[in-house]
Image 1 (cartoon, one colour):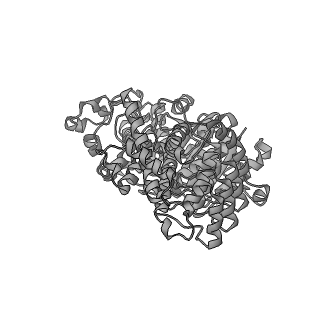
Image 2 (cartoon, rainbow, N blue to C red; image 1 turned 60 degrees about the horizontal axis):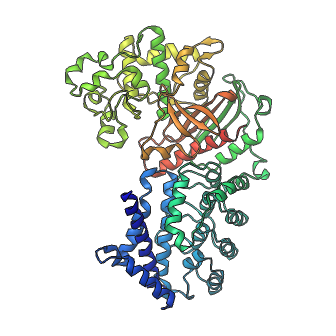
Image 3 (cartoon, helix red, strand yellow; image 1 turned 45 degrees about the horizontal axis):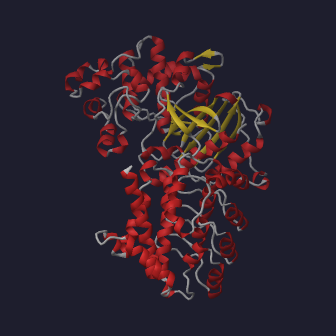
Length: 601
């Protein structure tokens, strides 16, 4: 209880800090100003250094709003930082009041909804798109605080609705996120781009149509911190507004009129139409219209009832161009293990991994590694770390000596106790299949997997015996493999993969998949409640449960079982590129697929 009281006192003190700062730098001396200063001075103690300096107060306020960050470091907390920044930006604008032609600074006027002051700025020729140190414009601040009349006035006077703040969000994203119907209407009337994506890879539609449960926590934080300055947000009202906003943000009929997604007719896939297979062609057209705005997208394919009903290629993608599928290859390596199990090479999935590496058993210092099983590798429950969190681990993986990571990679959990994504786990599976079956893995894959499916890989980056899951596929080859799993391992009437293996692969063994704050945001807004099988993901989307293979860059092979449908998305693979821009594009591609699946009845 005491900790809650302390947190409340800190929050109150920091709000008072900013209030004092506002009072100290804005406008002439008034009774209200004097009263506010008195209240502040009685709240602040001499031993609180943040009370002494406006610059420290500014930093302190930023820190107070970032306290929510650890709860979930995704696009929601990004938005929180954006909104907290708006508040601090407003303070920076106030400090420039003496240099403005109008008494009230434009950013402050936008926050207060002071239409008269805004109109004076317009008449005086003030730059309506002026950005403060954090990239916020008056239009952005007006959108945050729901000042519809100010938004309309700024837009009518030529304010740019496409400008993004330094966090990569524009006014339309923010208004949709907060459920500001009037602001959204004004922005759309002024030509705001409904297809523009934020730094979280989301369109404004996605913020309205796919709210996340954590938003209530963030809204509470916003009300607590910004309420004294006039920020209002009613949860029930926002929730009721978002479906209407989402409908407003759907493409207009004219936007879909010329969208062509007719598949190419060839022998490798039977072709049909959405209508013939019971799929709404308008929803399919919307999928491809959304796709047009994605600069790193390569292809989108939709297969319904085993027939290719929609197909289109973008940017550097092409029908016969194999591209790196990144970690979607893990789902293929899972198939290799299943085939080895069927052939009797790997009869026991609970066999100890170290049994296949007697040559280094005495070199492994962590005895827990002797308990790791093949099944745990398949389920990403081996305890090995996600190598990309540490450059040393990643370099060790790339060097190609599969025995070195087995010796040197530290375990981050006891085997079998927790999900932890690990590239090395998949590498080991390839080595184990090769050793158990006494065969070159590429030859095994060709004989047992590729020939029965009448497909071939593009480049397969060669480690020792092709153990690396670094494979290039064409989009149609990816679709054939996904269809194999959708049809429980059969292809043209032949059981290529054992039916029980497919079922086990698509089951869910971890409801804590990707639970760390650094990872959750990578899945976008639609793929929720992530689970993991044998190198296949699970997610809830629009009320249904799907399986999918997932690779960096936004490679997505989705299995929508209840609709007998496969959705393929391929994109620029961003090999060894892990900066924020790459995750932005990856989330955008996942949101593309997620939105489409969520809209299907």
